[in-house]
Amino acid sequence: MLMRGAGLRRTLAQSGIEISPLAWGMWRTTDTGQRIEDIDRLLHAALDSRINLVDTADIYGFDGRSGFGSAEELLGQVLAGSAGLRNRIVLATKGGIRPGSPYDQSPAYLKDAIDASLRRLRIDHIDIYQIHRPDILAHPQETARVLEDGLASGKIRALGVSNHTPSQIEALAGFLDASLTVTQPEISALRIDCFENGELDQAMGMGLTPLAWSPLGGGRLLNPQNERELAVASSLDRFAHDRNVSLPVAAYSWLMAHPAGIVPIIGSQNADRIAEAVQALDVEWSRGEWYEVFTAARGAPLP
Ligand code: NAP
Image 1 (spheres, protein in one colour):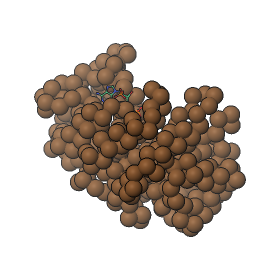
Image 2 (cartoon, protein in one colour):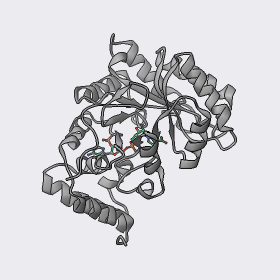
Image 3 (spheres, rainbow, N blue to C red):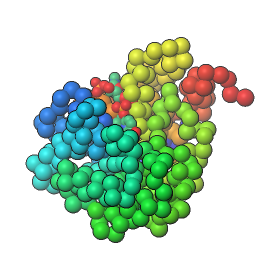
Image 4 (cartoon, rainbow, N blue to C red):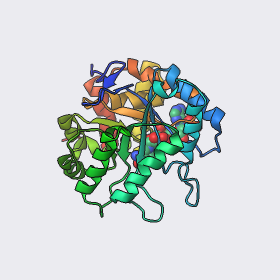
């Protein structure tokens, strides 16, 4: 049987920060016009299930016209309203997507973005600050300097990247004295690029924890749209039926079986679904079962 790659907590490289093997994400937080009470309830559903890693971003809540920063603002209000809550979570946020630019990691912008996130979140430090998407026009040496300054001033405890290629990660890491601790690519049974394009190999080699965004393919695993998606969903469904778990639990545990120690970021805004997700910790895969899903995802037999 394949191991899940982690116990109940794991420590991010060099930082001493302990995270849960699943995270909860706030990308969809303002989709349905949620209020402080809703966020408080969902956050507690995660904490009650021993999920301590919360992923947000300054862009979350932006609808194309307005709302930039609104997810962080809501989370900040929840944290400010409950003594001690801040210290129970590992707060990961992101910056570097700038509406209209579309990406900006120029030193002045990035420095201000970090300060603005701190203000909206009403906290004095960000546990994990991630560059959301690479700005091709930013030199990684300049980006590294701003991130190092954030660490030195205590505004940031650990660094990460999202949607970066292995060479972009290598370039940034080369200019940093501190280690990168997380990388956040899209990974699901419907998005398997990183299993073979070097991203996960690099993560293992550098000791980066991969956080998987859209681990259910943004919900498409529950609502497959084409022949390939149907084949992947059916394969997961057979396994789920066999183990008496739901398809999402099968899908999370499939990612967690990878040796890189992938942390799926649950996107659900439903407290029961967040609570159910931790069943994935008890699910083990045989190699044969795992490769059956992988083969369905490739859409072609393995050589
Ligand atoms: P996902 O888990 O792949 O999809 C979540 C969607 O599936 C929700 O709309 C959810 O609806 C739906 N769903 C339907 N049935 C479900 C079930 N039984 N259990 C759970 N969900 C079910 O994740 P995601 O929301 O696309 O992304 C997750 C997180 O990844 C985000 O919150 C964000 O933190 C991160 N992310 C990062 C990037 C990046 O560029 N770095 C991009 C996208 C996302 P309900 O809410 O109704 O349950």
